[in-house]
Image (cartoon, rainbow over all chains, first blue to last red; front, side, top):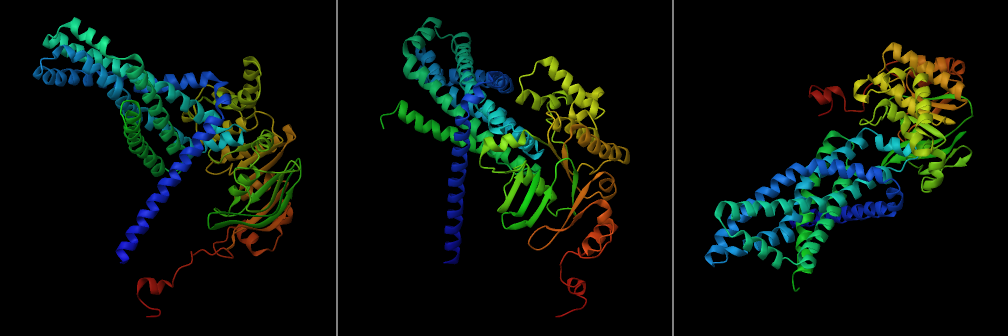
Amino acid sequence: MRIALEWVATLGQTAFKFVRQLGVFAILLWKILMRTPAIWKRPGLIGAQVHFLGNHSLAIILVAGLFVGLVLGLQGYYTLRRYGSEEALGLLVALALVRELGPVIAALLFAGRAGTSLTAEIGLMKAGEQLSALETMAVDPVARVLGPRFFGGLIVVPLLATLFSAVGVIGGWMVGVVLIGVDPGAFWSQMSGGVDFWDDVVNGVIKSVVFGIAVTQVALMQGYESRPTPEGVARATTLTVVVGSLAVLGLDFVLTALMFGEL
Amino acid sequence: MVAFRRVSFGYGERPVIDAVSFEIKAGQVVALMGGSGVGKTTLLRLISGLVGPQQGIVEVFGNLLNIKNQSQLYNARRRMGLLFQFGALFTDLSCYENVAFPIREHTDLSESMIHDLVMLKLECVGLRGAASLKPSEISGGMARRVALARAIALDPELILYDEPFAGLDPISLGVTANLIRGLNTALGATSIVVTHDVAETFAIADRIVVFAPSPNGARLVAQGTPDELRVSQDPFVRQFLDGRMDGPVRFHYPAEPIGQALGIGGPG
């Protein structure tokens, strides 16, 4: 009986913490959105973050995109060959990348690479009293520090996802056309004929915008709410990857069901 | 300039400040003194509006400080500068850019004007030559002086110093003490110094307010000029100023008898 009660208490505490974190997430997002006009008055700060966050993730995105494209090309060819549909390889690679793998993997890599960097930066600014220093200088840290990073992430993730998909298609072409010998005309024509701009490309971009908001906001919140100690910052950095990745995967299911499913 | 009226504050369940009342007049250098952890920094956080009192009121520049009204709070903060204990410099900016930061944020001055102002402020703290260095390339004492230049960048009426003497070598200590006194006079400002360094503080302060720990948080035990406090007979003031090991503040943290802890005597 006592063990059961303890179990229920633990469950309740976990649920309470989860709801509280959701509340903190929503309030901070609201604060940033409310300051949108003030944040966009200084586009240079956002541009600097786009440059910084994009540079941080560009190499890993391009390399990962190429390898994913190579694997997709190989696996797709082996599967399509069974049905004599090797010509559809370009379509398969492009749809897989544009609809799913591009937005999802780019967001996951962004969470691991740039997201952790954002969390550590904000957390260390808090630990070093730099955020308090901004406050005492009558400078709003949400508008000055969090806002530009939020919009920077929101802009960068779709760009990275697009690059990921583009490089992935090239990877699929290298394996399918260059190495295996699939007809290049069929590869490109099937792709251009089968990929719908609005249903596939735009939906993929919408997904990556949503993932960008989720991952960047998780990273900023973890840093801003972290305990100002080395242990607290380390924990927040880990949580950014865990929570950010799970948020991307969970949102992907919801968005896929809404965009492509018949639920 | 600043008034505390029966202010109480705590972090969660832990009381830190207990019904404290005092006033600070314009133009003075006032030291808030007390042992480590007594709540002196919290007093500065209350004055700068980083936290709000749970009971009582804090008045700054003659107005009630309402931390829930951001525009009023920021207006008050534009008239004050706070020197953090470890400087809190922006580590990715050079010393020059750190000092220029509040000027860029709050004015529309041209780059040449900003340059002149920053160089003058750095000259005041003797670090014009370090303008291009990053905070990681200068010593702790120098970082604090750069932070002081940043705190006075907009010529504040009220300057708050959080433990400005902590961890400084004797030369830096003397330099910092002279800077606090000199800047207060040069800017016509009011300075509030939180510290437990007796010698330097008594040399530069016009008034000193002493706080002692109590179960309900820090309470004010004495205030006056340095000369008045030197002859104070308050037991805590005497223990604090004379650096006595035991007194109202016990050397031993509360614990069971030593014999009982070692299992060599006592009850049981």
